[in-house]
Length: 300
Ligand code: ADP
Ligand code: MG
Image (tube, rainbow, N blue to C red; front, side, top):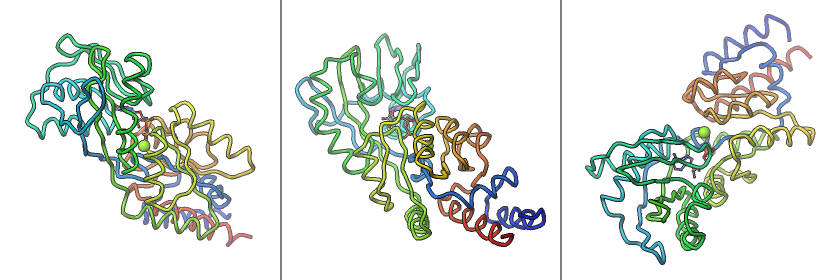
């Protein structure tokens, strides 16, 4: 592309909230034929809220509501986590009017959850992988049914254990962004394939994918592995754009042929990306692609 056409396209992009880091970013986007989307904060709004909280009493997780004292211990452990799921749990506890005790010895396990000491108790909150090995395997099995039920609704199930025993199953649900479905349809109409990439479980991920019209889902991806998935798609001969918002997404954004960061996300994601989508809107991916195509067409 000529310097002038690039300048014009860059200016136009800025009008639509599409900020290119450099001319190569604009040029490469025209060749993209697969767009990989992170789920939380990219396809979904990233402000999930608690939808269920049931107690586990040693045989089965039933519909027994969770008592306040246990809820407070669980939420206390989540106060130091920056994960949107943790914030949803803390917010729900505050809405209940609970006072949250201090948490110490806080450890965050990326892609799994948190561990902390609260009032002398060891509290673990996260997915099945986090609790695997630290609670009896039977308890994880007991929880599977209700976890699947929550996940089928598109919610993310969250397990909580105190002192090595399962005490609760929570569910946290996020809503899809208003223009996500339209953006996916527009990409498909242009012959661009889409993939959802998430650390969340497969059932929840598929439920969300279904809501926005995505058919390909890669779930249960630990943060370090997102980059490997991008590499795998590239090895199939595709030119890949990755769209994400989180710290976890940074290596994948760098690895992709074009990294696109949601401007509503973390600084680390934006620093790692070739393009920043200012308003966090999935439709901006389509705008970026169209603009790039139009610019490259002009010069051929
Ligand atoms: P995503 O790609 O959806 O942003 P992450 O890789 O951050 O997911 O986390 C993967 C999974 O680990 C989450 O879906 C959740 O089940 C669990 N998890 C991570 N952090 C927390 C937390 N602070 N509280 C509860 N669960 C968590
Ligand atoms: Mg995210």
